[in-house]
Amino acid sequence: MVRALILPILFLVSGLMVAAGQIAAGSPGSAAVLLLVFVSLAGVFSPLAFPRSISAAEAHRRGAADGWPIVYWRAGCQYCLRLRIRLGRDAHRLHWVDIWRDPAGAAAVRAATGGDETVPTVVVAGRPYVNPDPDWVREQLPRSM
Image (cartoon, rainbow, N blue to C red; front, side, top):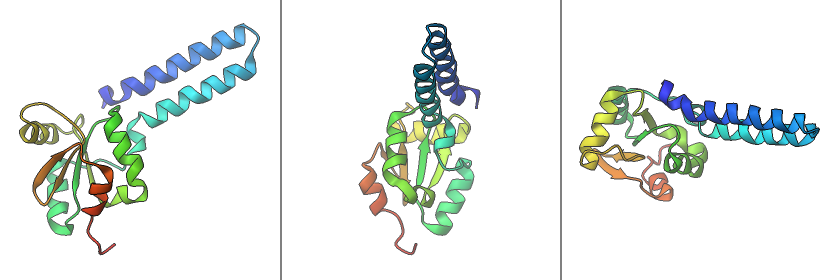
């Protein structure tokens, strides 16, 4: 979990330092705007931008029961963020597994990708797809919702 927070914390610390410099230079308005930008970046790259993660075992159990795809992801991954944003409200219809928090999830991704941890890796009907198009992922969602 600590590794997932490194980038957001760096954005926050950097934003505070830049804002302090702007305040010292006599530009409190610029400081506020820049701090808001850095806080926004910290939020986007934090695990909070994604639906709640579950374990790989739980994702497989739920996926077998409801047919929803499983997404293996990690915080700070721009491709995972792109998938999450492009899915919009449909993102809650997938099971999300953070590979930095679940060693079994990381192992599943390594097995699917030939040894590396390329994410997002989406598993649909037991078959893994590495960095698929978000529109394709949306098409794979069960129609019952």
